[in-house]
Amino acid sequence: MKRIFSLLLVCTMCLSMVGCSSKTNETQNAETKNAETKNAETESAETSADDAAAKADGSGVVSAAVGEPFQVDAKYGSYLITITGIEETDWWERKHNNEKKSVILLNYEVENINFSSILSEGVKVEYDLFRIVDSKGGTLSPFLWYFDDVSAADTVKPGEKASGSIPYVLERNSEYFDVTFTRSTGDVAKVRVDM
Image 1 (tube, rainbow, N blue to C red):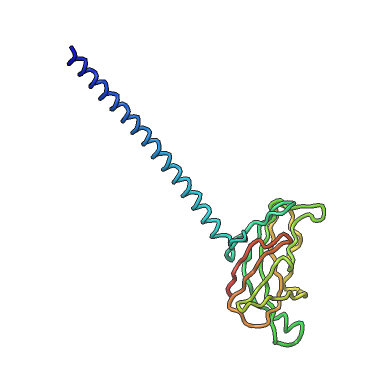
Image 2 (cartoon, rainbow, N blue to C red):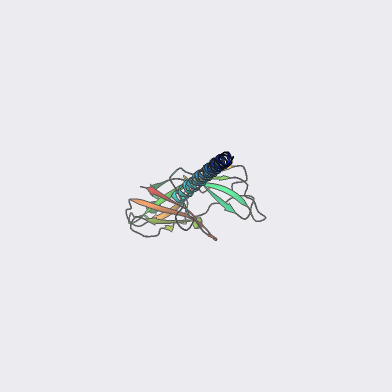
């Protein structure tokens, strides 16, 4: 009788150990799945952050390519700006009758998503929204004179698109230009334009 009781006790202990180990395996499997899910979420978040970092430097300024629109979010709405290129003109010679300097045109497109305010029916892009630096580190000055062959875009109302050009004085040759779109709240985007 004692042997039967001892045998039952041993069997009971074995079954309880098997039961505990299966619960441990279930717990370990659940923990592994949770860890894998968290790793996948972390990798996804890191990938999104890397994509954002690829588009912005440490200050949150977007890095865009020529022809790639960037969004400007303002108090009264949003709009898209696209730098489409830079071209050299003969405007300096036409205005001053000399060739010591030249004038470049910064070409852009603007698409008004929903920007409108009490002061303006839409977006008006002007020279003071851009800062252009040549490949030698010199900042270009605006050329405050237009000729009939090119002009700035008028006010672009919500839902509309327009293109325009802004002239800047170029005092020396440059391999490229770094164009920064800036607002009173700070720089928004940078675009490098090859000449």
